[in-house]
Amino acid sequence: MKVLTGEGYTESRLYGIIAEKFYELMGRLARQNDVTIMLTGSVVTNTLTEEVGYLINEESQYFSLLPQVHAERLVDVVDGDGWIDAEEV
Image 1: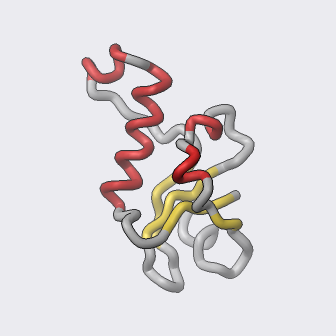
Image 2: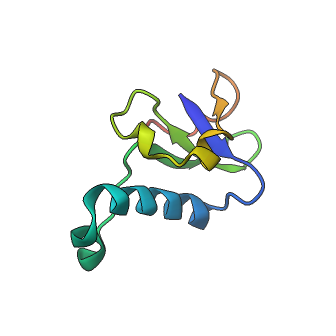
């Protein structure tokens, strides 16, 4: 499990990344129906720092859709760091 967080990653921006990946996968039909789903994880608030982050399951079949610019900023999630304590993915 990894998390995408840091400066510039607001809750709105993280949901935008999710929507962007979904539209890329589903194409034009998804845009016409304005449908989004979480492909690889969940947007959560860290229970210790109150930062917002996007928890990502690296084993998801859709993980590769995460653009490289964001993938380079992922950090490992470990017990007790406040991320996996936030919500179940």
